[in-house]
Image (tube, rainbow, N blue to C red):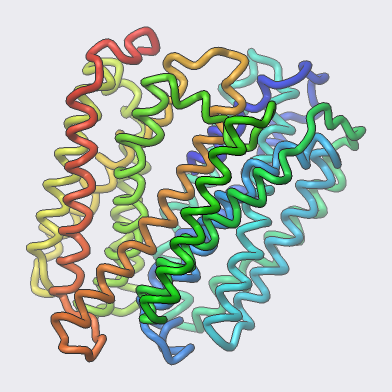
Length: 478
C-alpha cells in the first residue's frame, strides 16, 4: 500500500493543474484500482501450496510468482510518472488497468510455473503504472482544503483489501480453484477501465524531462539478474548458473550506480542518500525491516498449510488476523509516534517484531487459537507502526524540490525489499529442507523455524541502526 501513498508526492513536480471535476468520484475510481491491486497481492498467499500442487512443484518454487511481481513493480515504478507526463495520465491509467486485467487472465490460465511467473511479471508492469498514476492525476488537481478527505477515499479501499484478501483467497482456493483468485479481477478491471474513460479528462502530452533510458535498462537488468539468481538457488537450478546471474546483477548494478552519478536526471537519484534520515529510513534500517516483512508475508500462510496441515481457507482466515492488526493500529499509529518520538518507536517496534519472530519459532500445530490469534494481531500491529514511522521520516530533512524523487525511490526500494525478502525466505527454506531432510526437499516445521531465525537476525540489525540514530531526528514532524 505504502508505495502508492508515497508516489503521490510527485505532485510537487511541475505547475499545479486545474482542480478536477467530481474529485470524490475520481478518488473512488483510483481507490477501486488500488483495491484490485492490493487484493491481488494479499489473496495469493493462502493459495501458494495449492498452486504448487497444480504445477507439480514445491511451495518454495512458487515463491517466484510472488517475488517476480514485486520486483517488476519496483523496476517500473520510476517509469510510471514519466509515462504519465508523456502520454497523459488518463491514457496510461486505463491501459495499466487493462494490462493488469489481461495478465490476471493469463495467470489463471497458466499451465506451468514458467507461464505463471511470466504472467505475474506482466501483471507487475500494469501494477506499477496503475494506482500511482491514478493517484498523481487526482491529487495534483485537488484543492489543499480537500486533500485529507480525498486521500482517505484513495486509501481505504486498499486497506479493506488487506483484510478481505487472505480469507477470500483461502475460500476460493478451497471451494473452487486457485485460478479464481485471478479471474475475479476481470469484472473489477472492466468496470474500472470504463469509469476512467468516462470521467477522467484528456490531458495533453507534457514530458518536460528526458527519460533516463540507460539507467532504466541497467537498473532493471541488475534487479532481474539478482532475483533470477536468488530464485535459482531456491529451486536448486545449479549453483554455478545462479551465481553467474547474481554476479551479472552485481556488475549491472555497479554500472547503474556509476551512470546515476553522471546523469543530470538519473532514474536513481543517489544524492538523496547523503541525507542521514533518508538513508536510515530507506537503506540502513528500512531495508532489513522490509526484507523481514516480505519474508514473513510468505512464511506465515505457507507454514499454516504445509507444516500445520490447515486448509487454504483456515490459513487465509488466520493470516487475515495478521493484516487486521496492521489496519486497526493505523488509527493511533501517528499519535503514538507523536507521543514517544520516531527513534524510540522504531527501536520498540523492532524489538517487538524480534519477540514475535521468537514466538513464531515456538508455535506448532497444537498451539491454541487464544494464543495464536493475539500473536498474529500484535505482529501485524507493530509492523504497521514501523511502516508509518519509516514512510514519514523519509521526508524529515528532504528539500521540497526533491520530494518527488524521494517518493519514487522510496516506493521502488520498498517493493524491492519485499520481493527480495520473499526470495531469501525461499532460499532458507530450500537449504534447510535439503540439509534437514537429507535431500528429500519436503518442508517441515524445522525449516520454517529456520526462516524465522533468519528474519530475527535481519531485524536485530535494524535495531542497531535505530539505536545510533540521532534522538531529535524527525522531531519537527511530530
